[in-house]
Image 1 (tube, rainbow, N blue to C red):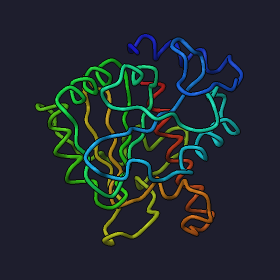
Image 2: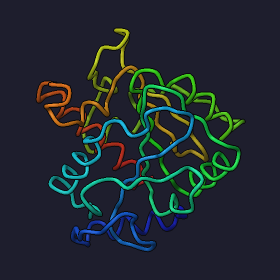
Image 3: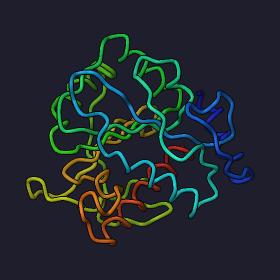
Image 4: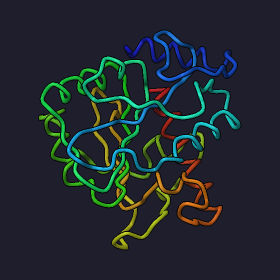
Length: 227
């Protein structure tokens, strides 16, 4: 999907209703679909099983975004299907590994307008950073300031990411890769934002944390569709 196509999609979202589609989202569809990245390396890419379903339900109920389907599709990093999604999520505790062909495909997708959100579920950080050097050898993951637009619209987070789970007790931190002035990779660290999106019965988080996670994830979707 080109940047021009993403911009056209944004205009259509405000006009379209929310039809139900089976995954994957058909090429050229006016509805917005989210995909989960099925990466190699042995990590638990399949975690946070209720997170994206809850995010999509919230987007449908609270925004004018025409959301495709009831849950996220699953895409592999080397697949052509990746280009049918402007927004892809990945999480896990363990190892992530990309082949050279997968890294090249991810780079093409990101440079053509894709947005990748990777949520550290406590442990994916070292391998993710390593593999991002395959995708963008000349780019660095930089820490995002609280003034970044991703923390401003449609919900204001003046202190950056909300803290969902403690992990090592440090503050939640957001990192990103910027290409041609656009944030295309977002890495939430020491935060567990994905866990905050899960059903209450999974982690027993209080409602205010679930609400904060939904709002911050909505900001990520908003940014992906407007930049």
